[in-house]
Image 1 (cartoon, rainbow, N blue to C red):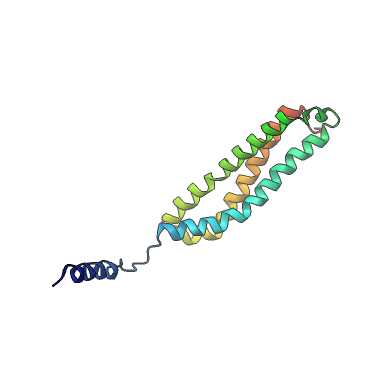
Image 2: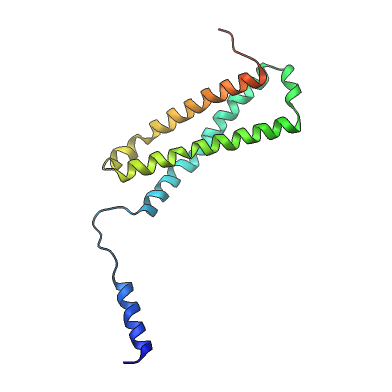
Length: 139
């Protein structure tokens, strides 16, 4: 047998050896599922945090006008990037639970993690903007 024929046989054997379908979901499928769920909802997260900052900015007007500087915009940009990095923690939770035996229950209830995460981030954004703009709502 020639070398090229041996190589073809070896390659065809390798390609034929696909793992059996034993009901386990692969990492790529779980990661794709997480991306499909979390990325469209990132917009809601960012809109919510932006609304919190905007409300505090407007509540402290005209004093907040002093924050319309380039350095302030860079600071808010940095905070927005950090908030989006924090949003990525949801992927760790999502993938961990999907790999557990509770995947089907998780798929129905992961919106709770989204809601709690958005609420928690909004509270943090509130206190950060209170520190920046120095305003607070009436008690």
